[in-house]
Image (tube, rainbow, N blue to C red; front, side, top):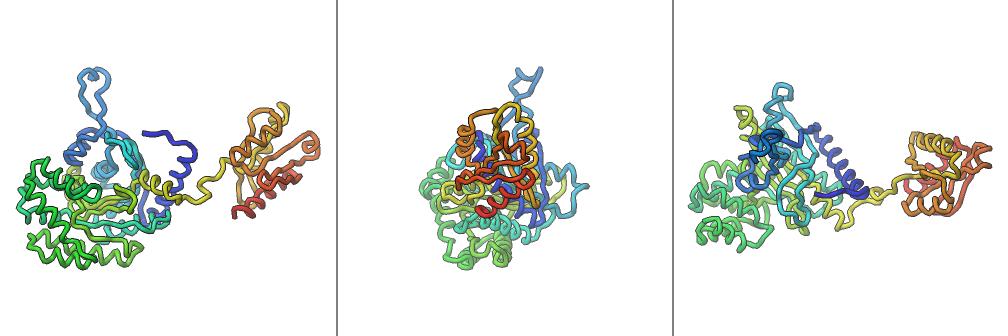
Length: 442
């Protein structure tokens, strides 16, 4: 968990702004939920590994000494969404598309791009089983990354029912399927030998684990068409064949979107969360061990709360990891690092403080529909010291009003970058500064 200094916040706001803009252009509506959920709401939704990472909140008041927990910090934004849909179903449209950008908490071991408190940026669609939903969400996430400057991302695509069919084909007992998927979820982040060792440590026979991993690796062809053909050649049960057909439909649809060329069918992709029922996806870049985004279809989750089947699918962008990669690659535009103000209003003496506040208010109104960001030096001081302070903060202009300027209703505007100074009437000072800013920044 971290503090965010001003430069960090500006970067976060920039990325969140791009995400929200793209999501809204795809028809998603904003939603927010509380940081705290009932513990029973969260338990059992994320698998054995996920349950261990939930931050539990002890009972309060007279129950404090019991050491029992009844609440928890939310683990993700998907389960709270399922609860919201169950509670407010009558108020929501038939096809409910929402986006949500809020923090979640996991009692995980911190690592590069992985924190115990982090933001998720989700889009979810409720109410349709059409593969158009997956294609649109992959396209939306891809457009976000493209607008942020990513060109080398890959969307890995798979299907949970295909995974189950492949595990069944290998002869692995159904009781061990979950253990195998948890280990497979690490493939791509660790070496294959480590995945096999992990399966063995979880009680899966080493020979079975080796053969199983070989099935997943051998099925991958040079193109998505090759991979589909390889998988279709395997003797899979009926739901595995149906899953392949759905994957083929998603791949065909994404070819008509901005995600074309970025989607790769990967039968080894597992994703550890147990609530997925259909297509699953992860988005990554070469220089990051983890993923930038992940998601999938979870048609049964809402039914746990509502008592009836409601189809649902979603994808989540990991804000923290996106920020880490963008910072390391130098991807933020110069405007993100802009100074805290456009102008510093200086203060000659205590008697002029009121007048300087009035000048700052006039400058903030700006000119020609463009406002100015104005800071006021909080106390009288040597002008040289005030100008030095402005320069240290990157503020490009300073407004100076001595007795002579005050008597004439003027202000001296000093360009701290060019070093020149222009005396203007107070009515024209804002316009002069804005024209200079346009000339340098556009």
